[in-house]
Amino acid sequence: MITDAIKKILHNAKAKKASDVHICAGAPILCRIGKDLVPISDRPLSSEVSRRLSYELLLPEQIAQFEKLLDYDLMLTDEEGRYRVNVNYNDGNVGAILRILPGAPKTIEELHLPPVVRELSYRTKGLVLITGSTSQGKTTTLSAMIHEINRRFRRHIITIEDPIEYMQINDQSVIRQRGVGKDTKSFSSGLRAALRQDPDVIAIGEMRDYDTIKIALTAAETGVLVLSTLHVISIDKMIERVLSYGLASDENSLRYSLADSLQGVVHQELLPTLDGGKRVACEVLVTTDAVRNLIRKGTGYHLRTIMSTGGKFGMTTMKQSVEELLDEGLISEEVARGALMNYGG
Image (cartoon, rainbow, N blue to C red):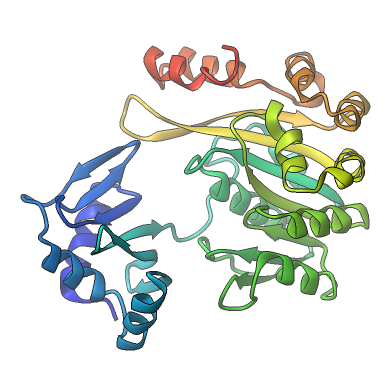
């Protein structure tokens, strides 16, 4: 049960359209609004108050576990929403971070994603990756693609998430959402089990280890559509990022599996708009024979050239996407310059 004190903090944070709340000794209560941490309390929290508020998020047995493990993750819900919580020690003090999770998934149209993203969600097999750095809306795009499949096709969709952020409701499809730590022990074990559950689509919250990547590629090669996210700063770095998880002896097999199974990559940046909102800027790589050849050779730096000339396949570069937002008067020139620093723009 969420206490009145925590409810008041969350209510204040939501009113400011915050994504996260930070409770930390020596600082006021802070909200993540866009890229900034904004105080929502008047004075810094004492160590005692920070501990009390953090412990209000936990049951007695969870406090015992936290004091043993020194970190504790959990999900909380109330009548207004769902929250992902991490309680932690820092310099001997107890603090917490709460992520305010969204409710229903957004649509591809609401996210203003290019039409090719919808087309990629209609594929019946292979691997589609949504890439980007932390907090760039990858999970939101992933859920929008699942929602698109759900409302269009009669499919069996299995998701493996940590945690489950968007709740999907069966429409045309049947969706089984599995939370790591709650419904399955890990991404890799959940993925292995999913292969025995007659899946049409498997959505993996994040590919973060070798076993998960290897099983995902196998599933994609054997006739299942696999959707997943991957942390990487640009599509050019995608190949080496995937290869970095494996052993040197496995590099060739990983490159060939990726080349054979990859259908496309959506790489995105979440940019602040002039009206105080956010918009996705994205570059899209659609796998062609030329792309497959580059992946087999491991020469990812040429992928940008293919994207810049692949408009007929629905490809676009980050530079094109950011310039469109700038031309529409949605973002500032400063935001545009900052967004393009990693893209040769």
